[in-house]
Length: 557
Image (cartoon, rainbow, N blue to C red; front, side):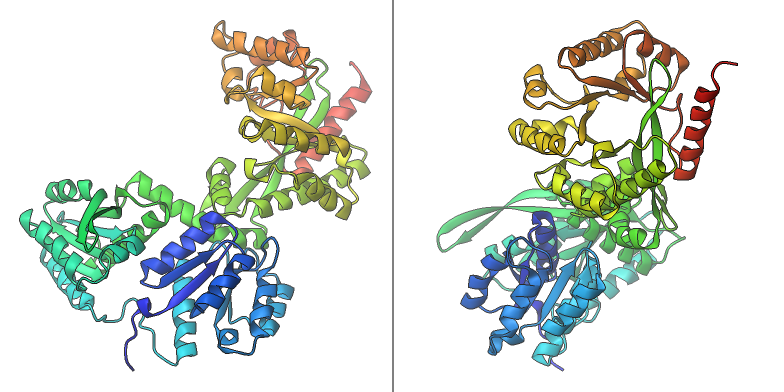
């Protein structure tokens, strides 16, 4: 069959999460497809009417018209547009929604976070089926001769001594570059790359239309590519000289007797793809720490959905006690992830990645359900049932009170025994809006604590405008609170400020008896930290409460 280049096809991406929309569109454009974008089904409809796409990639759940409603609308037309292949994106492959989508005519479902290899394969496959043509796989020989150059690269690396420098440079801004080079022959940019490499004594090999491998002296390679990572591209056209910012994702490595050239090139290409998805515009070492962090973040996004389904996530409970009496007050519910693939992951590692992937809402709901079920179990056992849950900045919005009400009602849990912990950043973004959310939570009996206090830029005016119930003193100040110095003065100031505003104080990260004694002496209300207890599984937390309560009822020996 005849090879059909991706640039012949237009793909419409519809997604209400800006970062996901950008990533999906960039990946498709990176593979040569022409891409249109819409942030809602309503915005997509005029674009579909104006110029029907060859394929639609659409989120299922969106404000206003949902993806399913859009699909039903298009399929009901009975014209050429009704036959456009339709691929759904969904955060969780809910069986009922998939069945409904299939019945409405969906061609495929992809689960977020998106596996981009699967995305490209799905798009290529459905375009092939719809157009009765064969879409070339990325590894198949292309019309630009890149397959031959790859073979030449592998032959050179095979003949090179260990330690030979090799790098893959991938254009981040492919759509912009395509517009700038419109009308020029297909090899224009490739000639520029080869010319620059030749001047520096390097060899260049085209891997596909916007990625090259360069080999040669390690230092020369780095010095040549460093200024190209972020550059201004000037092109003379009919309207004069135009300037565009072009960025590259560059990953450098070295040949080794421990690795075949094929494996090395594949690792460099995949790493450049990951770097590009992370924002690009940088040059990183293949096995360096920054590249390792990007790989970890990618693995976290890929594994999260499986982790939730398979029960790899669990919650722990860290007790909070009254500073004066030592009596249990409540516990903070902390999420943990034990991944068979990635090992133990701390929240500080995976929560920011989850938030960037647009999946924090699902994790938050899962934690709230765990808290609600645990609270009911504690109450039924006659144990203190007050619990606190952290809420990320992106989840601290006007929908939060109703979300909590719905989840707690499902479990017959008591909202008045819940405390929501939010960071200073959540409040400072829009203090007036934050205060409305706090008021709505208070109306349901839910307390609000300001977490990590002192690390942001809260002022007295902000605290007065947003009446939280509790201030949590950040562990960075608690660490040296038993030593004479500025941290003591800061903590004393926070305690005084809280008392003046009628708020309670919690010191977190209390790990030493000296810290505990100083905080108690200076009227901190509640203590939390390893000197009290490490975070515990639910059964161990219940046992600790029973032990404490048993001792309290027994009285002094």
